[in-house]
Image (tube, rainbow, N blue to C red; front, side):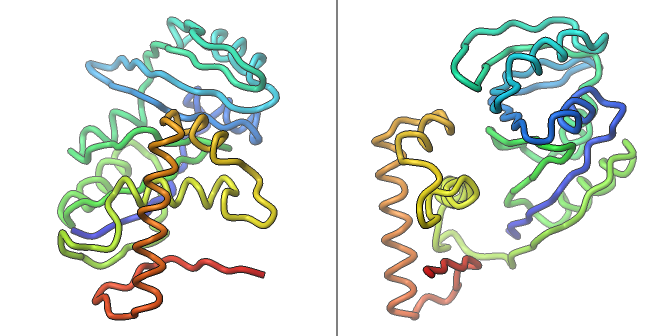
Length: 220
């Protein structure tokens, strides 16, 4: 099945779209979410220097009917909330596309990475359009077989590690910090990174894999 990366622009009149634009440096990690009959529930991790104030402002929205803070740390809050306007979740669920968690929202946009059949991708586009949600396709990777280079979870971890600066020189985040932000055990994070690095490096050196990864790693 094709692997696709979409950038979805959340309407400004939706609370998460508005507050993420008001605080563009704050990241909203959606750890779990569901929407039924016009209501939604979500568990969020709010990351940024304004995390405390952001929680206060979220509570002030009429469309957010309940918010409970269940974990507090420096520049981080984990909350559970209920909302009467789960527009984004409703649009994605209506297309039948499974939504992998966690995913992030920042500055009014959401990055959606998924491996889905072509017909479901078309349904997703139709559903987002129906709800007046704009989007752009950043990348489509051609269909690969089950023996593709990396698993979905390995790809997710690799992209998160790159995005958060784990492979920068100097590193912007340590292994412990990466595992903590992604809510996975340090040992699991380390082992998964080691396995995917092994596969990428061996494939790069041998050059005999039919499907080359669409990944560029540069050392200055």
